[in-house]
Image (cartoon, rainbow over all chains, first blue to last red):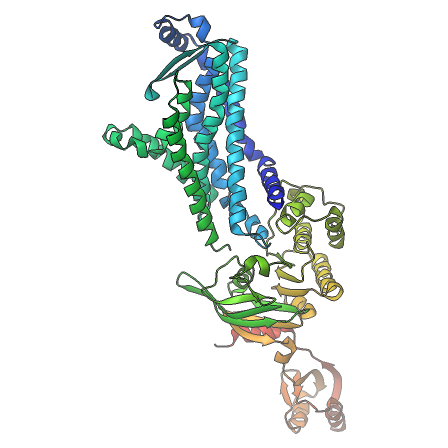
Length: 279
Length: 295
């Protein structure tokens, strides 16, 4: 019961800070920018070509859901990593730097509990941010293009799908928590580095470096045989939900890999925090 | 209440504290003195289980902090040199957050403590608009919730104005007298320590160089400031008294000696005695003598 009270206060601490909302505001701006880009003739022509060459009507599938899906795809991968790393990197390191962690640990509370509270608040933030992005993108897309079929094209994942309107919306909404679950891994890595004796900014930079390096190395053909070991390979598994027959077994394996990584980051981070001197 | 048993700490190759053994009985106000880097904050950190000792152990009510931190810290409150809060939240919310890590407290108990530290009018303001004195009071309030038996105060009067220092001193003394709290206090304001502490320990470069009542250090000799004329003739008269030492205008006489007898002799010898004033050695003088003495 006390854990829930403490967790509520942990969320209050996080969501009462203005900097927590930088990510939310940045994504709103980004979505407006993407909408503007999509209204330009050339990108539209490219989409038209992709849809019409498969025998479908452009007007039926270039809808609000499709636009929302494109915004989600383009904004979350890099910008999402950035803001999650910023918030997760702050989690422990900022409290240690500010001195509030020492105030807190004067009390009969275990360090493991403090680490758990912080980690769960990072998970909540991840789901809140991704949920916000997903829903605002859908709203903006519906206002811009209206209701219609969903077109998904992700060559790297081998996905080319044209989905009828009602199912398209359902799949879009189902993809949001799956994407959030994937992105939790970035928050977990941020949490892990935040437990070390380093500045909050350093923890965020190291987290981003890990993700970007993973992304870059995965793109190098020489490392193709190592693809199953790259984090970013598994991060994009949420997109398979749009396939006609989603590869559930593969998606489950990917999420097991990511959850394993999350738990490792949590345990290793807590173990480091447990042995640290706080001065 | 607190027992430190051969407590040592090194940060890498740099020793911060060496074999500190100390016992602080229940109900005392105990002062921990030392220059910056002497090891005071490290000692506080180890008593609270925030710093891991390289050797030895700290006990609170005979419970090892290192082995059973949660049990040892039941009934302990603490404040640090620069108390940190969630500045964007109100003082009240800060108190609720911090106390939630001990147990759920009724609002009445919180408000009672807020009133005790005199912060009731501003408790719902964001901490970022608090003055330094108000932050110190808020720090004290959180340390007092929920009613600890022991409070550790690291520089509680740091940065306060004279009025704030006076108030803080009275709050600490009230806590000790009215609630019987044991207080471990570190401060650079030696006049405050002098007025509050029953006993002190002095740390120098990580080693304890004194522990006990500071008045013990003043020695037993009686000291007086003298103004006599002519000085040379008076000094010669004083020299006739066994054990009496005149250094500049300070006269030291052995315990049991009678200053009145000396004054009578001086007057009888035709020496004009303008003033005889007893001199008390301050803690500051004693402290400076202690820390500047060769190891």
